[in-house]
Image 1 (cartoon, one colour):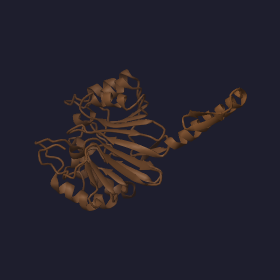
Image 2 (cartoon, rainbow, N blue to C red):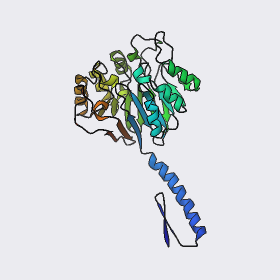
Image 3 (cartoon, rainbow, N blue to C red):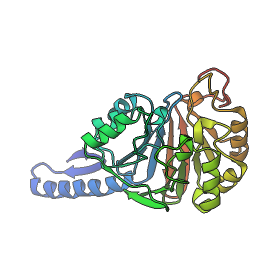
Image 4 (cartoon, rainbow, N blue to C red):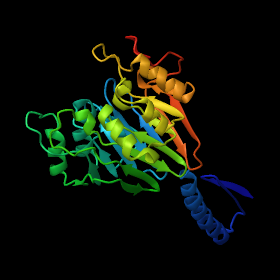
Length: 310
């Protein structure tokens, strides 16, 4: 009698018993296909990619659908996505029209089939850096979803993405950060909030109009951990268990600010993670609400800017 191993199934087979073996093999293949697929559907995975003083996020749903929120300043995110096994993008989002958020999105759009796009796409006179994104969307016939004046939710592979309306949709706002597309992600009992670079006015607008929708497990901090990316009222509404900051080592902006790191740490009992210290961060969120953050680099340094990296 021989034992045959097939992706976790163990078959026993007597020599010559070919018909029975084939039947068992078919059953085993179907079993693995079904329960293997079920096993995939355990968590949603978020990569907060270390892009220096820029934002680039990649979300992998339980059954390998992909969502991109911002893409850094160059084509490196598209290259990394290929390495991570991305074949197409279910949703691409540009939070707002600053180069450190949209600079690599044109390469993402050109490198992968993109089903849907969300972002402010109006052409603003005097601002040309986002022209490449508009051109890529047009050249590749990507469907652009309208930004509504009320909450809208998209469901992708059982993961819900709720898009908050902008305070006042303007083609060319004077302060682009307060024109950030904010998104809440939910998978079962797990939730995470992505805030772009929203500052005081937009933060207050969210608190005044959608306080319940802000309450999440993990907050992706606004504006690279700047002191103007949150308020006490905002943190009381969000009640995060953990805060993640995407920032580089930039002497001009000096993000993350020490006061922000202190406030985030106080709100989360010290559960603050940042790309400037920990590199690319991986968030695992389970349907039960359980969640875990893994660091690329392990250290206990404060996330507050001090002019050094990692």
